[in-house]
Length: 379
Image 1 (cartoon, helix red, strand yellow):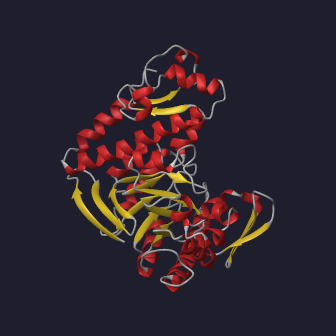
Image 2 (cartoon, rainbow, N blue to C red):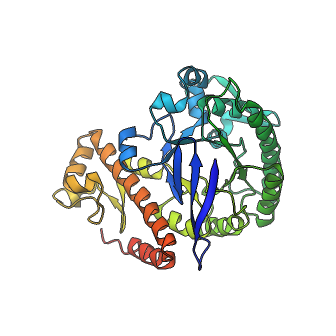
Image 3 (cartoon, helix red, strand yellow):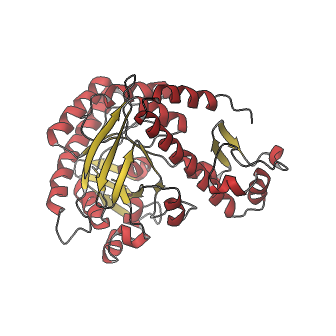
């Protein structure tokens, strides 16, 4: 993987660049649709290609449990298994294990947990996470980390980041061992470290210094958007993003709304992912140029307008709010597909416009206009 910064905004930390992987070029800032179990829910790979998604996420935890990384390895790797010839980033499984709560036990060696599928006892460690991701053939591999809960005391946050650092070092060693071996389907993969430290700035800096000492091809900001106030999330992002290596991609994990994307690009972030576009779509909530809209509301029963009158996606060019609402009321699967496609179109088009504004030196004006329109939702 290589990364080049091509444009930097003069008034903010926003920057535009290019990540080159074995499966294509990714223009940044980029939003990465989440394909938890080898699929971005409710949309096909053809649809993702129509939307020009250059990279999607796979989930180590879920693919480990079902169908199993050995099966995917035998079938030629995740790209071939899901018929996706563009880039894939896989998370480490750490966040999903963190989400299990009482169903998992964390110790130095790794995490013992009960499968949410059948209750069977399972174990993940930095080494096993690297082995799974190597078998999947990910272009970008994430270190196995402990996602610090919120709220966390300073001592809890410090203990968590120290464990994450030790696991990061073990991840690095195992990742390097696996490269170019018969246990891998990856082509020139890259490993990203994950910064932790909760909302404590000095711990964030300490975590970063330790990660840089180990050395990674990219750096992620983890442990945010887990319950803290949005203003605090922005503050921590701004604080640590500006200190991440300038010549490496900066990835803010699990964030967020269209507003979050614009605000965090301004703070120096290059990469984002979030389940929100597809998860909200399945519940009838769509994102528009003027904010969120719940298409299931009765007032849209005879509304002939598209989901967003300013959107040019295939759904908005063809279908009305009234029809989409009807699909939800009938329990038709197509409702989730149409809204998911539209929401992803909004996210990906927003990133395209952000990149263009940065390149033209107009990001500050774009940011103000974009956010102002989101706040004037009249639906």
